[in-house]
Length: 246
Image (cartoon, rainbow, N blue to C red):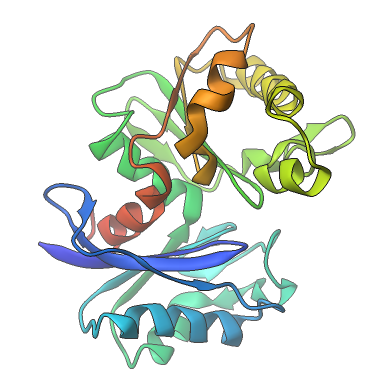
């Protein structure tokens, strides 16, 4: 069974059809830049460009970088504030010509995909996936069950949102070395571990492709730490799973 997944990020909107038996893309993903300003209408155009690139006409799952309840976007940390309290399912469904649309938090989507097909498969206890990118997203699982919309990237660290201190964007903007950035990530992981005592951290987002550059540098964390196996495609896979009701 194939379903389409779209992952809306702070820098790019990417998507592809997904084989839900294998948890993998059936074609190479298509990506467009996230518009600036990233208003609802402008982002909807980007989503449509990705979906229409494949001539898709079935259900579509779409991730959003913020809290999503009942298809309504409640927060907008890394996109235009015009997204707050928007019925995203209706907006995006209308722009896609009435296709069935399911909208969910981006890290939750990535987490569900990793727990089903990737690094969290078969793991019990508390598992936390963290996506490092424009911000820091989180997905918390207890014995395989998702606690939705946790948004742990907004925990306070050194007087600021953690994602303003330790995201991949901050690493790039401040020109941090892998060693310097990893110290920040380590402090953030220690804070999350103190609060939740997980058995496993899964590190996702685009930086997961370079896990060998920083994971070996992390010290003092009791939980096991592994890179996401689906890498930066996890959000697309999880979005498609949500659209299929999985």
